[in-house]
Length: 328
Image (cartoon, rainbow, N blue to C red):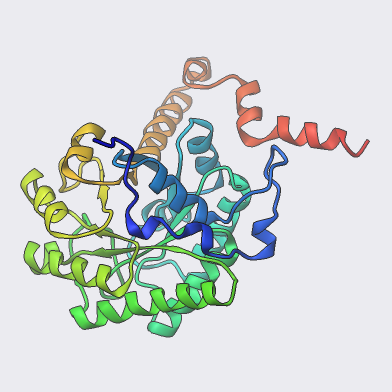
């Protein structure tokens, strides 16, 4: 029996999708020509077969660089984290322009090393806004976009007070995103991997959430994400009944069980997202450092820190100095 990983049909056509010249020939840090971001993501998903990919989520350029530096194969710009780093809760307070600005900065920092998927909430308006958002992500250099079916203002899927739009409205959003992607492809202006999310499990039922995911795939989404299944049985049912690749949201302290990668792989998930791990770890570390400083013990803070040389390396001084030498 052939053990070669089988490609999902949605992952097989990435080589035929033209990319903008600025991305098609842009050199990476090693000087090699890069393929477009979406094509690279599709290739990664295809070549890894049934393996579940671990995807720590970032909130800004620095955390994105940390994910890449740690050896992960992709990352996701979390709406929760972006909101937090701008001083707000994830409650629909950020605008399209703010999220696009953050995505642009992250793409610039990653320099094509790993693909970035960006959280675009509800698309920031009607179908025309959704299409503009998709075009903006491609121009910024994102590989994928993450569109959901909540009412505006949306909020974190594991907090109270969320509502979803009617299924027909949700389908219209996804159709607009797919149309924008296909129009970009036809014009030779790029591609975007579209992940369609539903929060209907919390507001309606598991059955409604599954039906929405089925519809999203029929419309042309590349992947689905059913937010906040309550247990492993619900996770298994979703993966069994909905075609195409699926994303699991591993939010510590949330409503969904946190499972190891091998269990998620056995259930049928392709990507495991960790939206708050870095944000939460950062909050804890900084709170402890501040507590020690406030107590008047700056020396006790030292054990919490990386060496200054490592700080400089992480933020990019070594790369800067190396490139600076070329112009002396």
